[in-house]
Amino acid sequence: MGIIKLKTILEIVLVVGVVCSCNQGKPTNKLYAYNSTSAEWFVRIGAKIKKGDTIGEEEWDGLFQSKGYQTYLSYSDSSYKKEQVMRCMDLVFNPKNKSQLDSLLQLPIPLNSNMMEFLVFNNFNAINENMDLAKSFLRDTDFQSIFKGADSIAQTFIPANNGGRDKLFEVSILCADPDGKVIGNAIVLDLNTIMHLEYQEIMQLIAHEYHHNYRNLKTPSIKDPVFQQINKLHQEGLADLIDKPLPPITANGLYPEAVIDLYNATFFSTGEKLKALDSLSVASKQLDFKQSEEQFNGFLKFGGHPNGLYMALLIQQVYGLDTLVQTYNDPIGFIELYQSSAIQNKKQYVFSDAFMNQMEELKSKTPSN
Ligand SMILES: [Zn+2]
Image 1: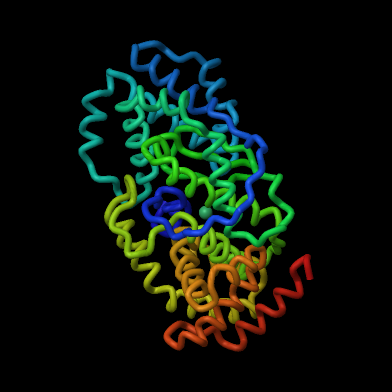
Image 2: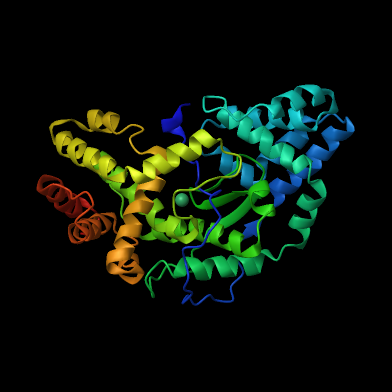
């Protein structure tokens, strides 16, 4: 896995700083769907390995059949990820591996195909060193009030009366890589990532995922490779206004400095990226679907987060947040707003007429039109 494939990086761990300052949402009194069984299984099995107990097949099955891991493992390459969880748990909790673990913990997290493995065992190690906190966090946290606050924040980034507020997905807490994700119709959050945060920070982080949730329910999607790129920029750009700090960032959890540098460089070179998106998109009209898909493979670094955030910030600066959120379910509308913001700003990349015509064509292909 190379840099380009680090799609989920910074999805959830950039929690320092607040961009959202208003709160006009109208949360209801509903109970928010939530479970922490995956994290509880993890803590229980970790403690048993630590004591030297052997973990039977049934217990591993119990762990992986709990809601959070079921969701997590449906994401990609489930057998590899399952083995990774077991391997990293054994490395961290089994006293026999102490010297190996100690020397691995001395190493910087590498920016190569081993990065995810390092992130996972470093993350597990942090749980092991804070088992009491992990238990008390799971036991004592008022998750319902956190979800209510998160919902309220998320709703300030969608228009009023959007009609989708009763359809929030269940949130599961588990122990995995330091990230949070919407996967299918569920949300997973990593325990170590949230248990050290203030309630307000956890709310913002969940609000980001709730925003994806609301947006996904209302956004038309078409299998067009150009549309997919725009969709990513729009999805992450708008949600990142909720919980991401303004670049340049200086740190990000466990991630190595090289990743931080790359994230900042990607943000500040958004104009070049949009220029490339413009020319590749126009050129893709001569390609078949597969060729077009291949040319965009790995095109947006960090899943589109930094470039999308850059675009959203520009629109916010020119038109304000209220106008921006009107396009929360309209990726093409987001591009059109960016375009007029860039024209007004005079210092930003302005898309070509050919590209904007292509947007018009895409708009006519989306199901809502
Ligand atoms: Zn996101």
